[in-house]
Image 1 (cartoon, rainbow, N blue to C red):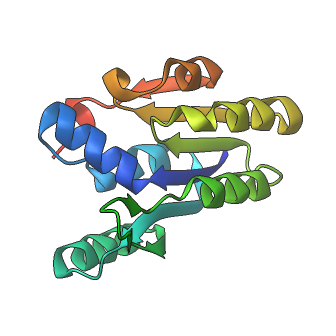
Image 2: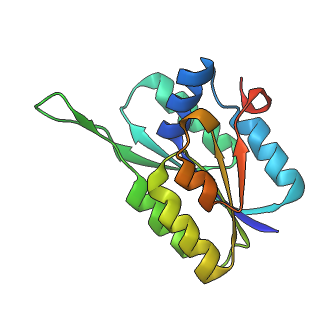
Length: 156
């Protein structure tokens, strides 16, 4: 099945860290998907803070097969920060829905529930969501064709 993968890196990083105190195993995940489906696109969306540890992680993602899309980290004068890929992920998923049979989104962000409904209803795609169940919006879980709870199987 022609499959496109989209990873909300910040969401997966923080939810696995906060819930399990462990990291997501992108290589194991890739190998499982690749064993069943033809990966036609794989984007990982991250924030570029310019630090060496992050650059090594981004290199590792690229070596697995992901196209890493970076957005600069913005620190505001009031102490808040910005680094959100929701619109970029949405546009890329809509663009891919015409060629992919299955969309896989790694995120727990409930803002994507409307997108998931649209991709299923308008394009007839299967949309699988991978997320940490305790930190994934119920609306996103319900909108998915299938929800896969991240557990020990996908943790380092």
